[in-house]
Amino acid sequence: MRTQVGIVGAGPAGLLLSQLLHLQGIESVVLERRDRRYVEHRVRAGVLEYGTAETLREAGVGKRMDSDGLLHAGVVLRFGLRSHRIDFVEHTGRSITVYGQQEVVKDLIAARVDAGGDVRFEVDDVTLHDLDTDHPRIEFVEDSASDSLQCDFVIGADGFHGVSRGYLPDLVHYERAYPFAWLGILAEAPPSSEELIYARHANGFALHSMRSPTVTRMYLQVAPEENIDEWPDERIWAELHTRLSDGSGFTLTEGPLLDKGITPMRSFVATPMQHGRLLLAGDAAHIVPPTGAKGMNLAIADVRVLSRALGGYYADGRTRLLERYTETALRRVWRATHFSWWMTSMLHVDPGGDAFGDQLALAQLEYVTTSPAMATSLAENYTGLPYEHGWSYR
Ligand code: FAS
Ligand code: PHB
Image 1 (cartoon, helix red, strand yellow):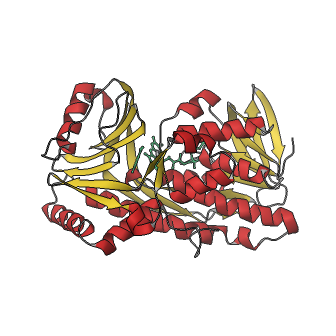
Image 2 (cartoon, rainbow, N blue to C red):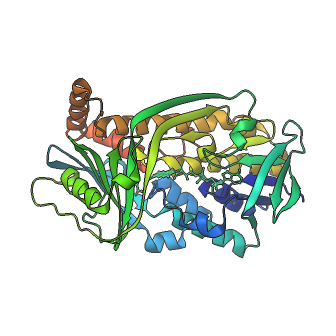
Image 3 (cartoon, helix red, strand yellow):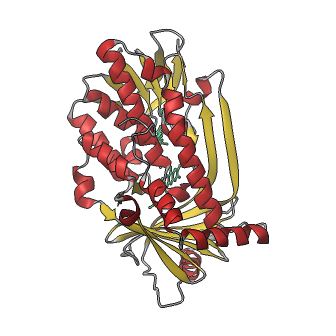
């Protein structure tokens, strides 16, 4: 088999890159370990930055997002039984779109398959070869038969637990572990608030989000080693009621749980994001705690840079954007990594009982909800920094 760009991983990064390359007449093959149903039903991110929504429209996959996605002009911070709204439009003129990652993935797979794109599921034992040459190769097993894909470039879009990062010989990584995790639920219940609520309560953090007018997505801060079996539905709802209460009649509508799970929290950045003809994108290179809703948006931003860099190479042999990919991508990655760490530190309660840290967090929340300058800072990071001025490529 031969193609121009071999892509490992059919998550948002791999699929969007394949679509953006296709629009430039560049061939790719996507090799995915899981089956299509699994990939299309994996419940993950929910918030699309303003620029992410624009990118999906430019990629020709924004139609269902625009009809089913929920446009939000602000977010609520709740602490000390008081609620404070940060108005994104007032501070930045931008909004966010609430639309599940699995819907983005479904739209991208449909677009690729409809265009006759080559997306292969249930592919095993991917190994990468000759990455230091101009003819790298991906070996894999499909339907129990070994196969090989010759290409010009290999893109590692296989997430944090993928294989690609392991092929970078001179990799350095920066990491921070957090003393908590998120217990996430998907409930068949109408959202109890029009907008997202980030709540800091003495018991811990809670987040009220949503997926549609009938499906609510919520999270609770729990211990990192927490066992989901110790969280029956009743205990989850009781804790959500407690942590999300505002002392003036806010009621949370309950409903049957469609999904529940515990996600560990970490900050992780690998550099460089490339070696020879291998380039990493998305979670394969970086992970952020979900408090800033940046994970999937960073994957999309990496792919914008990559798609433009590969486009320039195939158009007229330009290699400058490819050579500077790591430097360009990491500028936005570190900004989002700081923002995600800052939101996490401000909104979570240190289980070690750090009274000093608690006072710092409350002082920060007080400042963010009373200073227009701080509210603007939160709003511009949350809605996504503009792609110009080096925060990616326009
Ligand atoms: P992905 O992990 O989405 O995709 C990688 C793909 O590569 C997967 O389909 C995987 O099956 C495949 N793959 C892996 N190894 C392979 C191999 N060897 N061969 C072939 N294929 C292989 N972000 C938020 O903003 N908000 C959230 O609430 C949120 N919740 C999350 C919950 C969980 C449990 C996880 C793991 C992540 C969450 N994230 C969240 C982050 C998430 O949305 C990621 O940022 C996003 O999926 C990144 O997209 P990709 O880089 O494409 O990686
Ligand atoms: C979600 O809706 O899944 C979501 C929203 C905001 C976050 C994290 C997750 O910060």
